[in-house]
Length: 358
Figure 1 (cartoon, rainbow, N blue to C red):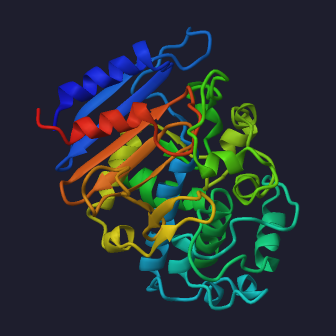
Figure 2 (cartoon, rainbow, N blue to C red):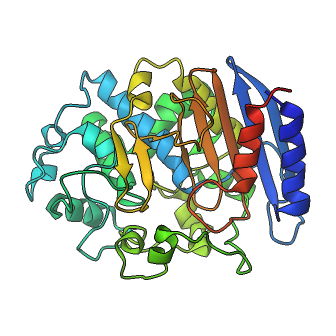
């Protein structure tokens, strides 16, 4: 592990890659071996960023949210082969009665797009739309960028009686001492870094997904806009969105908390569910080869060389993962987004240095 190289790349992100504020946390063998933080948490560069600065991590929230459902399933003696409709009977409508938790968690449920026009801030309406929605496919998989969070939330609620954000707080954040929230307490609002949208000077990678994403009527674009609302960065900076529970994309916390969370997962009894690939091949939404375990994206070289690695990136650049083989966990968070939904140069260069010899 070349921690000096990570340090240098982190500094170069500010001088050469347009970083505003960011943190990195790396753990190995159960110990945090590197913690870096620098920059500012506001556009005007008046509020310094520290290791304790929480920030929105977009879809990197899916990792903690998935762990909540895995924990609930394990605690209540349910496995991945059990049907979702056994705990959530209304989900079985529209010929979804045989969908399993494993299929739902590995993005094989075929519910990435809602045909009913509902807003994401209307929880009951989204859940009813999911219950009435037929599967859009029964073979293969496709990333569920937004509906995933509501699916997990309602499953956790049906199993435990708690909303997922509350379940996270009780069973993970309090137990492990994590400054990470799925539903920020109001008293923490002033501590959160402002998220900034990608700069217009940036260019998207030239591939099928980003070309399709530019067309609002394409399947990928519809998936990232279903249910409607909460796509705008400015909207996600509001108190209402920060304090709301959005398990697919609304988590707020520190790099230290995310890396410590993944370190904790390495000792959980349901770890094999997070490391075993359940779906792989062409992704109907991301339009590229992807692979998923139960709730987590598998390596695909995004999370280092180990085949056992698993994690979840967030739109704009945030990334967190665990490597059980080498007992390494890594988290990077920032507030100046880059264009794209997968890890970019700022994170990938640091991740590569983690696996270099120092």
